[in-house]
Length: 503
Image 1: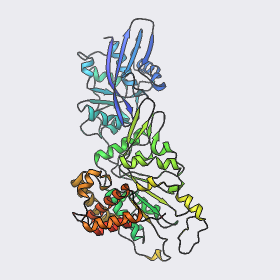
Image 2: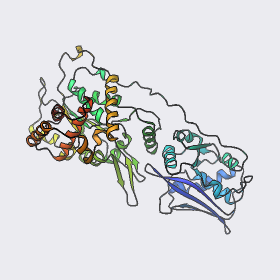
Image 3: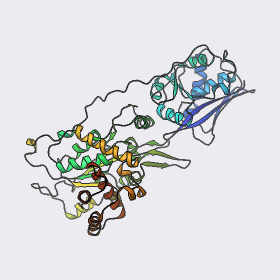
Image 4: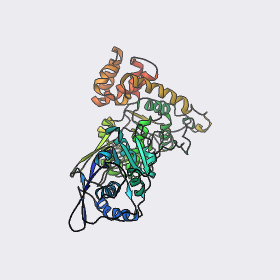
């Protein structure tokens, strides 16, 4: 045949959009053209494909070769199209023999992705999990052909057949009926090399421990303010150990995001924990680039994003968190397209009460002027603080804190959190922090005393509607933790205590 058509995938954020690889051979002077908005890496595939075909013992056909990567208006990047292009050249030139009626019909349920070396070996591609997830969701009966180094990661996707290819010759022999590509198998889940920090290591700070459990139970965001050394960072690092383990689908999505960002695709059921430095830029936090990649908030998807020294972050960096905190995703707009990455993270932030850190300390005196303190705290805008569910001030530790007994360990707290999360999933299929207004009307009803208490708080501190909704969500979590079907006034009272003005 003079035309071969194969299927591949182009990454567009976490989506892997189907790409039709059309290879046509025609008469004319020898030429090799690739069209369909290829970038430099795809255009260079002409030389890799030529060398790989010759090194594999085949003849590179003379004549005019045109490769079309459709759809033509979608930018194509990376070398993952090398394998389908090379296989298409061999098919179009009639060098694959042995299989009856080997053509588009025989290959229509196969998806190819792999970069070729000059020797004909197939090297690993980036983000195999993202490709596998997209193929499994859009075309459940498809067979995915990937490099051996990437196939084992893709094999974690349930219900998807993944073939592991080591070289171009192996692929040709498979479709020519002279051999068979092995089925890829997923490696066992590796245990975490580091022990999880335990909550029992935090001595004292009963209020902070309680609020941390509430945050874990309802998926609420948390801001802790207090002098240096009060345990803010220590508490934040122990929050992931209180959260339920990731489901298989969640773990796959987290690993796929890591693959897109170029990081190691470690498959684990532990919620991710990200703690970017306060010098991080907006693209580093939110995501971006010529070919947009996920930022820290997407890398913390289904886990915890910890921002230490919150006021030290740039103002525009912090303001970029507003929409993701509300929607659980982030959209990155470019001139030709808009990409959306998931960002259902749980924000935990810590800050000092003033630039020197000692404002309100029992023994150490603060040297900051009122103007400096106000300017420091003013770096956090009202709209951003409105979106933080829990806001507490941690007092300085007492001198005898080292003699205090160990607190409750993470295990029992995690069990209570799991029970509370189970109640929420059965009732509304989401955490209390993600309740929308319609759901709140049915699950966050207050009795007369509760409404009266909330109305007094609204009048005293002039809360916005967003803050009221946050308090109601926290009240619902407190009721779930105590095993109550309805929100009692005591739950509203405790939720109000976690929103007292501290600025």
